Image 1 (tube, rainbow, N blue to C red):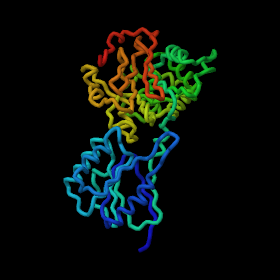
Image 2 (tube, rainbow, N blue to C red; image 1 turned 90 degrees about the horizontal axis):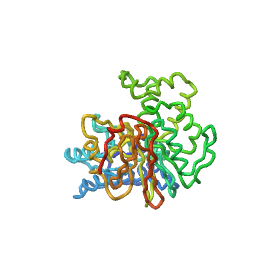
Image 3 (cartoon, rainbow, N blue to C red; image 1 turned 135 degrees about the horizontal axis):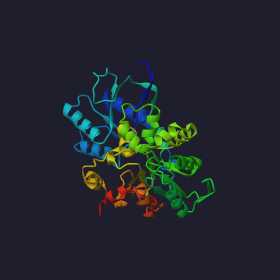
Image 4 (cartoon, one colour; image 1 turned 180 degrees about the vertical axis):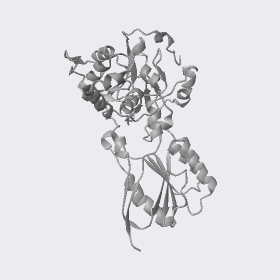
Length: 403
């Protein structure tokens, strides 16, 4: 038999279903070629590609084990399932259900057989003829590695600033930063302390130019999470958001006309957004965490599909309903184990902690507080807040959450 070369393109958090091929031939290919081709480790950041392989779906615990592998916080990077010769429709439906519930893609790999008709359940279908001498897989694993943080450091995670530059600088000064007359950082804590801004640095504060100039001048000192405000303004100004409600744009995104009138400032804003990440992740035995802009369900954390990226960036609040009622999923999903999940976006009178869920948007722009959490390498979490200098009638409407 003539051996072939083949390359497959996929994405992280995919469940592969293997159909066809003799049992021994298929298992040998999966274990000796497919699985090694998926590996994309980053040892310096404690990242090792997690691959869960199920060679036999007949085990009584198969579906339970599959669900555990796909569920947070395990969330294996890839799950491989050898389906055997005649998998039942009910088995496939159960796998599809687990994939959907845990925000996984499904892909079919047909070995030595013609793919079936395209199915809505599969993001991709692949046909491979065995044996294959040169096999490779292209994935988006390198993208994830950009969002991984260095272990062994103390991380300061700062909630939404919304152009509250004076308060941000005051908070940074309390942490040992010093600035020159232009706002450039001249002294900072040693590199064992790292600082993450959780997004929504722009809008509402009538201070767009000053905050963007400050952040651009000092961008090498911070990790930036992209917020829904940065994302919307960035794409709106590129003409990528169609049929936007101009009344809402005018009311909530007042940075837009300032950026439209100042090409130099717009270029700096673009640089800051492109320097930002949709989330950050630290892998550590004692202090693992995710940092996202918005609260979101566990199944979206750290995933790179469009829906997950949107959920980590934006949480839509229905102002006609109690805020806490809409965030009850945090209480339901919280647990005593790592990883921590730090987030902002929902302005409240108080920062709150629900076991490993830690909220940090305390409405600085509304005259309340600017809050940071500090996580040490040993896993100890503390919070610190400074008072806002802003006056805003909305302060009285800020909810007090999870007391």
